[in-house]
Length: 451
Image (cartoon, rainbow, N blue to C red; front, side, top):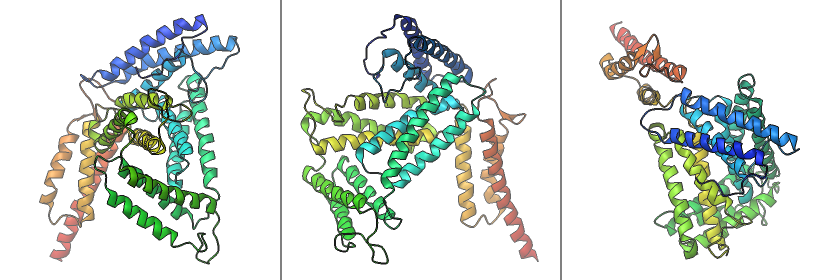
């Protein structure tokens, strides 16, 4: 396991809970690793109930001794039972996504922890755009809706934990929003450009083949931005100094210094951190590849191994710094390079989680075929439609082939009825509707020609 090594529980009454949770975690991991068949709700729910039962017992014990009921691995020093419990909830959350129960409260756990990591890194980095925060804010709103829907279904212990996680995310989000408040509306686009330049420089810095010309192009953009200043300040269309100089000017300076440092080092980190760099870079590259083939190759539970590897690396930092085997910290270039890769990796995990479709993996092949068919039909429609009905035959045949798989309007896999029937049927109906519109347009053109 990639969970950090921490002391065993101090309270002997928690030992049986730990042992049961370890067995449950093993069962969850076996379920995750079994690729011989698709995961079903009936495989996940009993394990979920086991974990909830242990949470209730743990909370009861801690309540008696006046301890905290809900753990938070981002704030306090935790006991081993808390880490194992976190592993269980992470796995259950990803399993709920895998079986297509995305809109239920347990599915939000993994996303909440990933968002907290992202927000912590954004605050630590000290640069981010309003667009970064808007996406996270919308995601948190949809997660809150899922928790509200689960009030009469799921354990209050789980809901309290999830609500606590969301509250912590909102506190971090508000702090970040406050950091952008000084920016005048006219200055916001320029701020976003500088954030983009800083990230682009970091991206060039971590490529297998370093391109000095790309960094020099970014420096030219910085020079062009600086040329817009008047007496060292950024001004509006009316010539007045815009509010938010204290945010933008240090960011411009940071961009320039970073481009110079990257050109000097040519993407080479310190030798003593080469192993850490290679390990994090490989994680980032694997997640990047997954993001390009997500619809066809991702089983959400696969993200658990990436989360835990990243958590282990992130939590091994000392006072925010990467250290080598002798306890010495990295230089500025290496430090920023490693942090960029970790932040980018967490961002990929976030993107993959929110892109997860509310469809069981058993129905994903059908769903993905319909997604592709829908895109093709829309492209035909946007390009002017078809000239005759024969051109629609391949699409109609594929639709009929998929439709014929239904029994009483449902897609069965063997004798099982997987989650996500509504999403697949809705997509099938949409494809039929687009095909009908294209055929109707051909008939109208034919009638007009005859007239």
